[in-house]
Figure 1: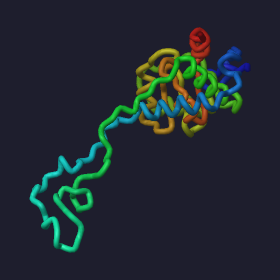
Figure 2: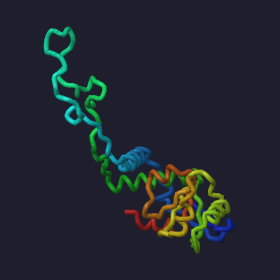
Figure 3: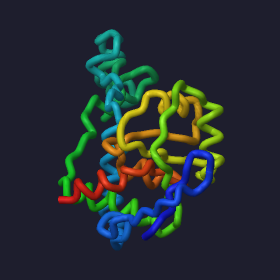
Length: 208
């Protein structure tokens, strides 16, 4: 797949980039994508949920009613789960939701997601640029110039740029990451991707 590289003013730079077919042109594996996205979302969970069981709620341990003769059920504690304010039965406990996937599978999932974006013609290439200071208005104009869209844009840099990141931080529909941070969920969660020239070469060099 061949793409034109645009300047930040929206004009073509004259350079053409051929995307690696082993990354942007494979047959997508939906199950690999499912597993990787599932793991990513699970790993975001804090797992700090907690409720009190009957051993932790603060109530008297005095027996409520006599064992026999009341005509009702037996009750031995106000802490029982059937009472309002009693302990929660089988409630959630703190736990770690993190899981592990093989590197090859995660790579397959990322390449599958990138291939979907290539099929949808949702990738825009832009030549490397720098910003002298954080300017959100200037960054918005760049996105308009290169026609990246205004809904869920994923901007991928070859290396970290503090000014570009700060310029985009106040835009809820734009996410700026480096090539080291790219993941399947971020790719699929975006309507369009903007790759700064050089990102594709870094991805190609990491194929194992």
